[in-house]
Image 1 (cartoon, rainbow, N blue to C red):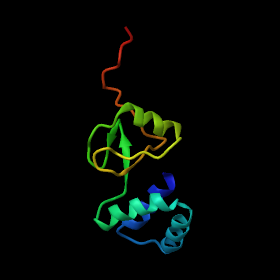
Image 2: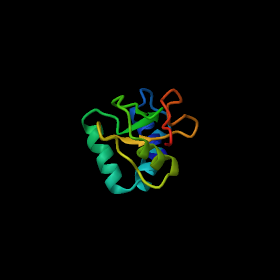
Image 3: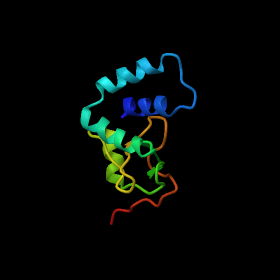
Length: 108
């Protein structure tokens, strides 16, 4: 997801960096085809294909994501899509994944 997020950043940037085209080509070569195809379908519609997950909320549609999805992203086992907007979810290492103000589940 980190590579796909970097690709999106380069492609949606207002100012093009001198070496951006080369880097875009490199990223497109290593990202798996099915993931890239889904990303491109969203981009063709003018939408970003990757949304950052912040405090258990998709930054693309601002809907809350199930905790199980957050845990999958933290483990890094698989790619996850938002159930609402169908964007790939990206969890940054420096951002909290779960809202600390959310009520905690109590064991009974």
